[in-house]
Length: 302
Image 1 (cartoon, rainbow, N blue to C red):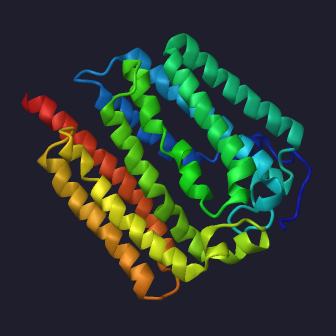
Image 2: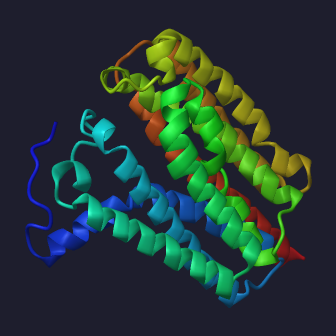
């Protein structure tokens, strides 16, 4: 366990840095990125400024709140894992009352922005996503089943839906396709990391798949989901949501994803799980950017 220090020691820059880390900035950035892509894809041409700005702000605030709540609830587990034992609650840089107040402030502010300046559908969908991640997944699913990341992945796959709803006031088929891509992407993304960290999950008594079913079984599941992801990534082209630019991009990106999974399954070298985990983040961002480029290219030509 990391050595603790009194809450709020250090100067203002240190305090701000601690609160920044409490928001899981890298995770939130990916969430907001996919939500923004959802907004831009929902717009037929010129993007309306108000729902774009306030939708982004509200979703960001609520995603940061969910991240803070997750750290509050998972503080004991975080203390046992190398990648999380430097988090500000674990180290004592932020005490529990301040962490709770900060999470509530972020969540309430985000909900108010979405309700008053965007639309009710986006607000309630975002709240449901927050509850699903910070409540159902963190409190129950994470400790109840090795399929935790599969079931809980619905919350992580929601941001494009939120962005789409912010822009249109509804959830269409195209938004559900974006949801499905992230939903299928989540298990191989996270299990690649879990393979590398399975001893830490075992020490923390978290039933991740490599702990309950073994690393070999998890490698197989990563490969299976990666193949499914390849197929699912073709859906935007199949339903007429995108054109040839996206199709070419997804065949290359998803093919390389499957290559990583095959290598993880059969090469048996250390570090391959982390390489796949790193590529999976690049993959999702590149895939959604390809969708966006294809969308605006079609609009420009039209």
